[in-house]
Image (cartoon, rainbow, N blue to C red; front, side):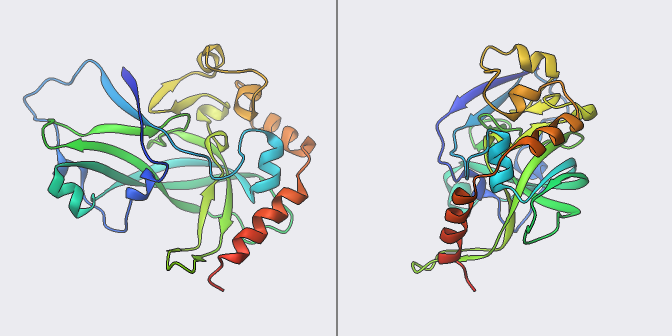
Length: 254
């Protein structure tokens, strides 16, 4: 059983994941002679959506592809040196995703859907005074854990170079909270979210869920065919997409 605890955190905490990996055990593995706790805490960080992501119209406007993925492996990412010196910080993760199916693609998408994806995710919060790191997830998002399946609406973004000297490599990105949906057993809403596994029925019964809100809420308990039909019926906002593309072009490294 897991207990979810919400904390305040910057929207960019996922950037704690870097190119250097380190085994989680090196940062605090449980002692062999200590009994496992009955409950496991998950810290929920707050973040902001990259793009509108809730409705089917959002997906067909901003996404390049809607894919089914399975998380098959993960690697912990070493914290920044100042975090290690401070004795507190974030351990990121890179989660290896295998793309099992492409449910929808936007006409004119700049890149074909990937076959695999090295997905940057939150990992753990560590504190030198605590025995073990505590799992972290973003509020409203799947944590994306090995052995689980998800539907994701993704887009390809070219490398960014700003006048201030900031840069970001070309990469696949999700849209936001509503664009990553548990999909264990081929059922929308069934599986892991916020580090907790629940059935689609339990998700639909959650008092925080608004039935008319978005893709996950409306289609909870349905299969991939229902999602494909909803995307086929949705109308993209061409003006909104053009605005996003213009902003991206302004910061392009090309």
